Length: 334
Image (cartoon, rainbow, N blue to C red; front, side, top):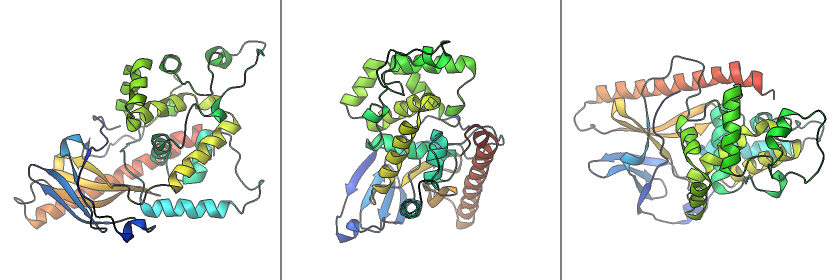
């Protein structure tokens, strides 16, 4: 997968005009995007609000799509409003289904995939968003393991590894990192396929004291990265009740997704480009593109770069889908 340092955008709010439009169910669209010298990337939205993104703190991506179909390419991209609306409509439609028609919550992947569709990036981003917003909590009562003195005979490997856990996912870093290292040694980390290496490194470098500091400082995006890995390394231990809770939490987060959620801006350094992107049912979608050196290139050069960027995103979506079909679909059976 693409190797890069991961940042979620730190946004400097320049002006916000709150009017009746912001209360509607239609998300504001990008009306203009400018790379301002010495300031950053400015977005103007259809509700008359203006935002400036600090370029140094934006996610940076390589401009070439990978040639291998063994790794998912992951960008921290927000959900597109059309995609959210489709999910809401699907949820309403599914409420009319009988219990026998609804899928069983046998695996975390099958449950989330049934709800949101798409590939692995949809799965990861939706889980991450649910964790960031607090809609999904690993220490929820529904994630708590029952207290029992029962022991399997003969002793199973999963019991040995999880017998001291209070919940179905590890809620301490000591437990989580221990389980990660065991699964790494045994080649059992398929659930983490496509997770950015930066997430994993941050997870391994964070002890329980540092994790508690994230909680106290309300660094929700950073905390969510760790919780995501905690959840995925425990996915094979989840029961139907826990999977249903997680799936419902994801849908609850999505249906409450703010119409004022800011667009995601990705920097493609090779093209001197800032790209506003969203995630729809087919994958990453380009909303707007602006170039840092716009005042020194002609329109033909700008047009050529746009075409190349669109081609990169198209290829990434294709490769992500291939990974999903060849690997994840064999492992998680919806």
